[in-house]
Length: 235
Ligand code: BEZ
View (cartoon, helix red, strand yellow):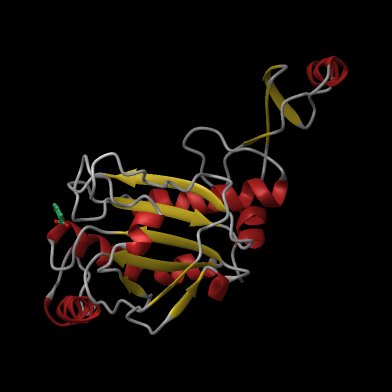
């Protein structure tokens, strides 16, 4: 990559950049093919590498869990299609890891040898590598808007339970007009929007039957786990 080249980095709130690509599941038009679904678009540095293999096996094993939450997975690396196919076949036929075996990766894996998509999404970060994508994760909502972005370095495998938690937390925030506190899990109390006027702040402190107010700006309320799961998961 040329020195001083401007690298675009899609941000939270931006429309997900569009592209057409060849994948292990056939050609895709992104994100329009996924309209109405949440999407996790994620990059990995290279096929036939150990951290990436552990990640793909984990993500493939959780694919149904994400699908129940109306979320499709789409992977990418700057390798070619035949390398992708060979790697996914090796994973299925040969690799047994942490009780996972015979794992079939059914979600699409984008070939991006030209790095066109990786550059569009700021996945090539030259301080880390000029030739490999970092481990980027883009959460895109059903309207095609980027809602969260997480980057990890080459050496570190992602925590997929956290990616799932983040997805459910964003869906909960949308469905119930609340925010979620540190380490929130379904069933934990949620945060009600901060009082926007002195009157509401006063009311909050006087009328705290449904809420627990730590102070006027920090109030939580109960939100039943079943209610959350019934709303965000297809049942
Ligand atoms: C890995 O997936 O194991 C890996 C890939 C690129 C650099 C370092 C580790």
